Length: 267
Image (cartoon, rainbow, N blue to C red; front, side, top):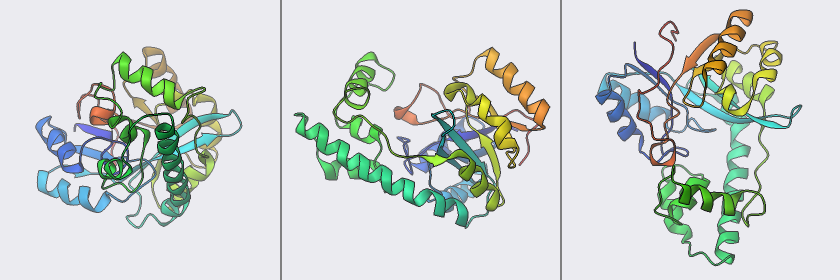
């Protein structure tokens, strides 16, 4: 089994269409894959069909943009193998997607007012088939610099962080509500890359409401993160997952299948 359980497509903030991601997965020998596009299950019918065409087992997935309000920090919650209708997940995420879209449209206007040339319709086309615009879509129309370059990072920071004209963020979903929605749809709830967002302290609290696992294998994790995650998994009887967190040109320089799920995890 070679399972990449963390990839993104143009259904959220990935640069590649779902079929391109699936083709790359096939070329790299991936046997199991999960598209965990942010706060949406819109792409599931397409990726299930693509899985049949490419002979790759597709595990329904989502990455919910959540928040630890007790500690005032972001936490991402992965949901796997939920019922296709995903009634609870969609009801929870719909308002967030609406807030994100409204905020993105505001950001575009702020950046235009600051003297940058931006075409709203062109940005919307870049985002398709997603109905939600992300900062990566806006950045694509501001610079040709690659995501990992210092030029890209500096421009991004100057616009979207600190005192930038488009700084600020939307209100995210409570992490407890995210876990409960996933469980309500018969899914498996997993805390994503806790080493990246320092989500460790929240995990025991989420275990109390049914958290199933922790993402171990991620490019941002160090050897210390691995040991910490393994200890938590053993203590609370949690599964460990993993994947590339692939975003194509909108993310780290990594290919589908370069990082995979621990082999003993089955879904």
